[in-house]
Image 1 (cartoon, rainbow, N blue to C red):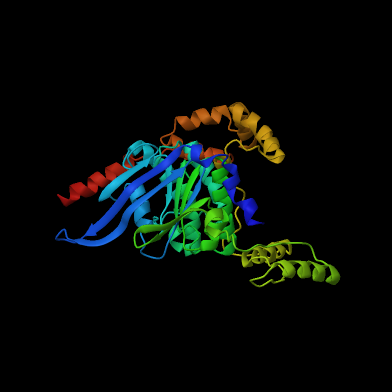
Image 2 (cartoon, rainbow, N blue to C red; image 1 turned 120 degrees about the vertical axis):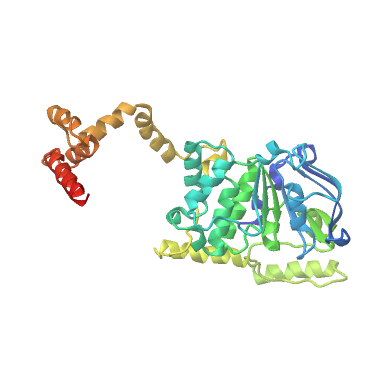
Length: 406
């Protein structure tokens, strides 16, 4: 799929008129040693804004200040100088944090919890009720391709699978601002493509995404604007079209031409071009597109894999007002009467369970162990209830034994 179709920049009618979600002015962070002496200036006088519905990229080599900037935006670090606003408040504002989803560079997960328990835990932190937690967990696990491995402990996951569950936990609260630090690290090409599709879907819904990545092709596919860090400072910023365009050259793409037509076109171009080289070659697709095409053909041939599956479409609650497929609506209508009429469920349960005679039930409730007896009668109606045990003789024998020892 062409990059022009994937890039959601066209979804923003007027980026400068959109609401400012993140505002950074003169941001500086200096790390100090034990004696309070300056040790490293990680971020040095940084200014930028991120607006609603925008996909904003943070680029730069290792140690250039990207992750430090993200931690400052989250309120995990205090700036040495400068001003930060997130949704018009300080990054340490508690209510603001409920509107943010964060995927750190390293996944910090409880290794003995399985996938569903992990999402249930993070959903609890946002005070989601049990029904919402279960529904969202199911949708997210299907979306990230872990629906068939949800009972496995997270500690057994590969790095790529841990990134998948980490991405799911970052979206459990349906955040308005999503901050992703190296989201595709450790993922296979299918997972990378799905993450990029998800980012684009979130932006189309009006959510804001801040993306930090070393994979420039990923950034190029999805970002509207980028800033490039080096030495803690922003060295370049702007839209991808502004930064990547080469105004001193021109590319013309046509269908395959006959030899005669091609010679005429080249002769005309060379007549007007006085400097530079005129080249003719065949356009190529990128390796990612070719890889995905090969995998798609393998799936059609019914090939199986024991690893992470290709995820389903974006989770329904993340799609917002997007229309449901017709099949989903039919299933919803079929399931509605059962959910709306609990009596119907009760009737079904009664018809499949063994019936207990009222006289027997009355006799069982008078026995010394009513719970055990009732359970036995329900599981096997033919079995008689256990008779009460007379303990008087046993007590007499015990008393005589104790008396003999005196």
